Length: 274
Figure 1 (cartoon, rainbow, N blue to C red):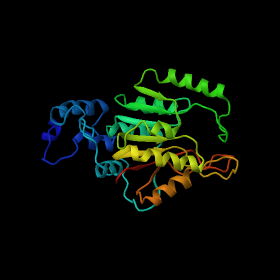
Figure 2: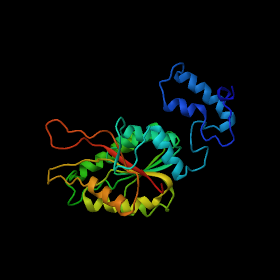
Figure 3: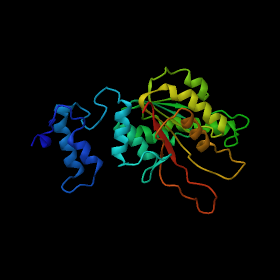
């Protein structure tokens, strides 16, 4: 059959057979090795990135990105806000960036480079810019020691040395000025979580992401502690409401941390221009 030879069966076919198989794995009769062999056969007809919906160098349009997300996670109801993707986390999101063929991304708020390493490891062909001032300043209670932050910076340098990652030691707003509008495939925001800073990060970085790209972030958390400035939920909700951005996705189920009156940290994202 032409499917198993890796060929297109109809002219407007968007995805190869391996794409369908991987979305519904495990499947009877299919092993990772068998899927790999199928991809090799498909490469002659679909290009080197046979299972990549972006093709080789073509950016993914917004409708295609959104369709891929809904198919990938088998989502059927997109009217509620946010749309929860229960069995997923930000490791899943890193894999999604790779599946979509994202090649130029920014992480805002890198700290020690742990998630940056996850992003790079999931997508070896990606260029990642890690934006963080690594600078202590008044009003940010999480890190108040410059010596501690300097240590985090050096730790990040070593952690990301094997990857194509550039550390940008600037404030979020200053770093955003270095990127042209629409030049990024994705941005992941995980910096200061107080309301003014989250809003400022969204205003600065959303325009930098092309249509069909993804804006995402960490710590979709509702906390009752007034001493902990965790305003991601109201800030992101206000932003997407103001600009009529739908749907907004949240990765994971809402859970209470044992012994604490707060949610577990989750990630959120939306498709630009969808």
